[in-house]
Length: 144
Ligand SMILES: [Zn+2]
Image 1 (cartoon, rainbow, N blue to C red):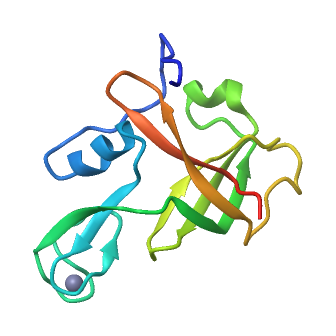
Image 2 (cartoon, helix red, strand yellow):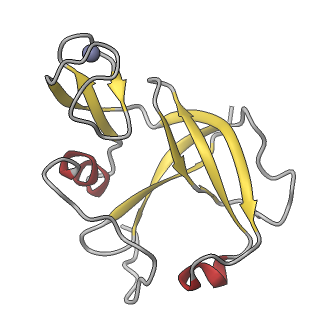
């Protein structure tokens, strides 16, 4: 069980009928995305229509949670006051095994160390329950 922080001040997602499948998956420690019912394409961000075949038919599918670092930056400047004490922090574009890419953070590394994370590093999802309602998917380096 992750501990719930009593005062979480960072921006939180608005949970809607469209994205509930994703956020409820996270709450259950599962990375779920939409899988097209017609062609099987797994898509993200959440969308009403398959970008490959334009079908509206989909189901939520649970992904492996594994992927690799596609791109990676470290932020040294504060753009939102709630992130001030995290500086420097990283933001990674994650290439998931099933195809989609998503933005997240790599946890468990020292972001001030420029060599801590490299493009191509193998990673896997971890779940950060930041409030009772919202669990945010993040990633950690995976041992080979
Ligand atoms: Zn499709």
